[in-house]
Image (cartoon, rainbow, N blue to C red; front, side):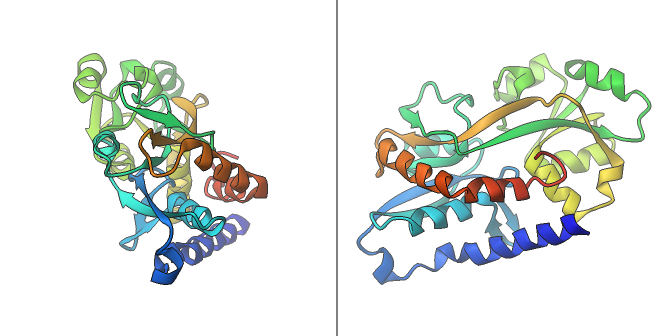
Length: 263
């Protein structure tokens, strides 16, 4: 009950903080616009009742509240389109992201770490071969998200590479991965810790139906990928991130969004 109350409190915090989009013309007119790319992933960015939610909108509000030079604005993209979005100047930065996720060929820099996430192997608890299953994950059919990067594949997200070298079933988001696992489409699914924590709150019975492998697929820092032609220099962005870290609020919210799964 305590966990559920705390998660409901987090929901209230999210709802309040999503007032980020209610900026007045007077408040924002002299600020430099900074377009912040985000795509559906875990508790980083998702939709609830048709509204954008997750830690990205919260961070945007925090970044706008602690300074008056920049107006950070949400600019939705997708896991596969985000590279083109930043290359074409449609966004100034992508928040939150890993530097390991195939950014080497792009004219970008990386902010200081903001939070830390991990991706988990999950299977149905009813299986009798769990130890063997998790000991040989790459020999098993796995449900994965199209455009996501996985440790078992050295973070190569190319769908042709994945399907030629592994037995993967690609889905459009983590919800489809989890639904496919429950439906028996594959013995293993990979989801982020934040996503799974959110599903445990939405469906408490799910906790008894799935098992998480002891070893994650990957653990990684989430940063901002900042275009070298961004409206905000990366040094200025890092100073703002340092200010947010100093309050401890970002880490506190991140831990609340992961209750029951990690931290």
